[in-house]
Amino acid sequence: MFEGMDEAQLTGLRRVYEEACGRGLTLNMSRGVPGVDQLALSEGLLAAVKDSAACVTDGLDARSYGQLEGLPEARKLMGDILDVTPDEVILGGVSSLNLMYDMMARAMSHGVTQGSEPWGRQGTVKFICPAPGYDRHFALCRYFGLEMLPVPMRADGPDMDAVAALVRDPAVKGMWCVPKYSNPTGTVYSDETVRRVAGLTPAAPDFRVFWDNAYAVHDLYDEVKLLSVARAARAAGHPELVIQFASTAKITFPGGGISAVSAGPETLAAIRASLFFQTICYDKLNQLRHVRFLKDLDGVKAHMRRHAALLRPKFEAVDEILTRELSGLASWTAPRGGYFISLDVVPGTAKRTVELMKRAGVLMTGAGATWPDGRDPEDKNIRIAPTFPPVEELKTAMGLLCVCAKLAAAEV
Ligand SMILES: Cc1ncc(COP(=O)(O)O)c(C=O)c1O
Image (cartoon, rainbow, N blue to C red; front, top):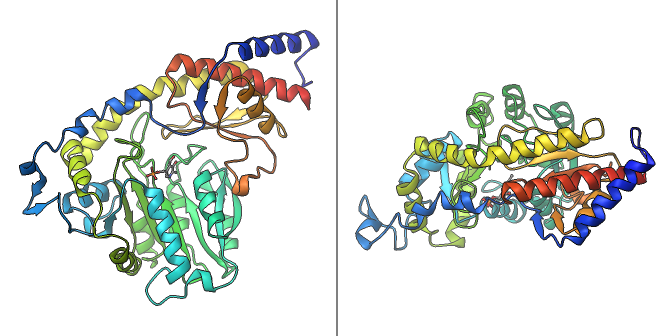
């Protein structure tokens, strides 16, 4: 039992928990998915291209083959989101994760640029993984057999001293970064961190930073401006160092959006070269729908303010409940945007907490998922994904999460 809890309180908690188990809850809070009210905000996308005449733009017919790198106006839109020019952008399909997979597969089989040695022929390949981080990034590393090197996340981004030390090893070929509203901590990289990433001097000439700007425009409050990593890298004399990714998954429809990759000229040339073998073109009708619906960066920002209005009460409800129930026992982040809140419970109790939640009918992201290979060394981190459930259900789930965290803490 932990300090401040007596036998009577523990009995009370157990009763509350057993009652909850008897209620037959079935809630899924395991992934960062927009709520149905958020999806409805993009209803207009479905009808944004109504007839064949609307499919022709600047003499190009979006219904047919061609424009391998994407429609020019869609490249402009995604370039504006990533703060780069349209010619520095190549569009993909519905998923930016797919582009990250492609990048890694290409690096393994053909090298990061044309003529460079494939990673797959260089023996052990290591990748820097700020943790807690995004489980799918770690899953990609695992899939390709990369050794993952966790580095701590700080309030202003990854521990860059640790990163600078690790890149002295030529086997270290890359690093994951989610620079704005990181999954799951909500961290925004400071200007200093962006500059230090851009200024890295890795021993491996084929080292690349995978800059996954999934939450570039996902502010819940005032707009937060990230320093341009592409400009910083160019200024530091490292135009090929960083590869950026983004998508409209959480702007319009996850699984129905458009994605983009941006990189230095040589890396882009390598992407283009392999793209020729991968596809004849991606879905330009969807690109066109996005341009017609969102229009431009100002349109995107206005749209994101509507998302924020729906999401703020959810993030604030989570913070209120955690503050009321877990102050002194746990710590958590209070992000100003993005899709997640990161909760650190009493060390050694995250797995047990999530297990208790599951028994009561609430599915959380697996404990450990936020760490490479699913191994949270302190078994304390839990990712809260508050966006999908309606706010009343979210409050029920959060109340239960606090009960479970306390019960688990009382067991150690
Ligand atoms: C950091 C991050 N990158 C990428 C994705 C997936 O994006 P997409 O749907 O474009 O593949 C997510 C989804 O949760 C994410 O959190």
